[in-house]
Length: 293
Image (cartoon, rainbow, N blue to C red; front, side):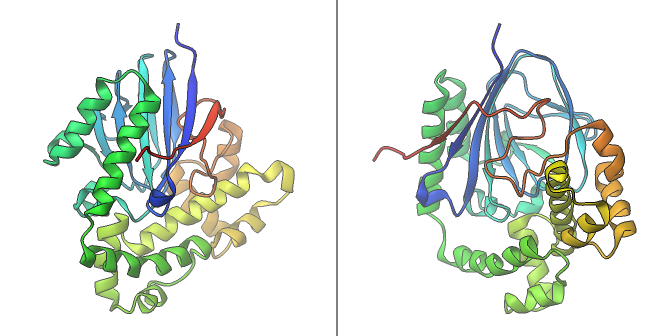
């Protein structure tokens, strides 16, 4: 029997502006759980049975690009799970794949369908490797190689999204007009560039950030004593009714009913994140990885 393990890895310093963290999960237990939009795209390597996403009617492939989503969903696995996940910063996936992140919106796309030979070769190497620490090294080397080849024009456009994105994470009630002014772009140009890098429109992304902020406050509600009206205000909602309505739209539950069902957890505002696809939140280890030169 495989003991459940959950291991986090911090990226090397050169990759930290682009990669939030990596995580590895192994279990022989059947998974049937509920997760929320986290606001960050991911590349997933399945060394055993991939996950089923019933809301999309699809199984993830052994190499999967998981884009931005605007809905909560269930995750099923048959009890033979071993996966390695690269969690990107909200706006960086495009830099490594040279594909607009909006192409993966609300989808689980097979990495074998995007015609990226080096990524496919990386996937095969990982699937043939039993040592997950070594797999993380392979992934880091691939990411560093892609980073060194980034086009100057793409990086310039990427830098224009940095400040508006930081503002959304700080105050998600900010208007799109204010954000486009920060980027020195027209609203139409800004929305196009934001979709290219982040993977959804800026207004919709503020909804995901508000949800994640609310989940963060709910996560710590017992220790802080904060009430729902205060959570609504602190998360950037207009009022408590707006908070409940939008929360239910994205989660399928009101905040109160969610608390009765599970322990809320914010992936976006907790670092490193104990992913909400698990039945429990346990950290076996956190490793800072420095690739060998």
